[in-house]
Length: 221
Ligand SMILES: *Cc1c(COP(=O)(O)O)cnc(C)c1O
Image 1: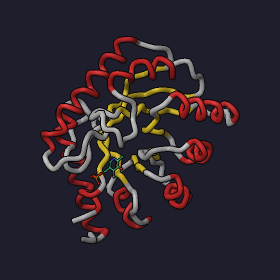
Image 2: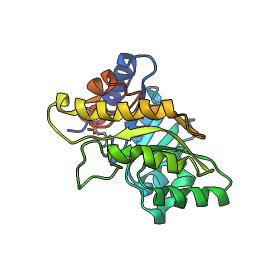
Image 3: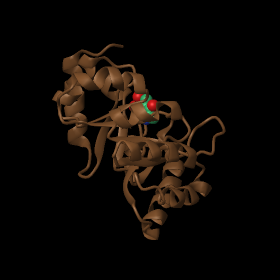
Image 4: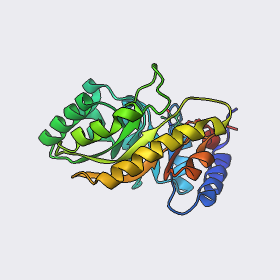
């Protein structure tokens, strides 16, 4: 059901208040209107996530507020340049090839792009993301790229009705996060662990998430 902008604002304020210190809310804005996104920003949300380059392209110029724009959907190489222009951080890097494209374009644009590596923590064939057993190798390859900066890991985990079913996938991702933090690669900083959505963010936080991406809970009733 459609929620009024007042109700969206109230939900956002309550959600922000309920999050533990150190956990940042990213409002997942796919398919939402400018008014809906404006409501969460007015409520104090400072990070907005988009799945599609086109949606961000339409929306970003309409906001003067100092919010941070995250790409949380899969990125195709032919959209790399636009993505670099539009986003402050790309959460969905899952291959050396995509990262190299971003790096090359960032070099020509004189930019340093923060990224997260997306982990396919459920090992699902249909999903994007690097497999947990390959994430260390990918991150060490990415460390060689001078214009992107790895700042952490992101995962979705298999969709399920019961958030407890997600716990083991969040845990697997957290173990990789901690392992990589210990390795201490150059230009690699394990700062953000992006896990959990509307139905699973509490479990994700228990498993160490410090970025939670929430859409339906904010925008739908
Ligand atoms: C839509 C989406 C979310 C938010 O999901 P909700 O269940 O609506 O909270 C989080 N992350 C990604 C990558 C998404 O596409």
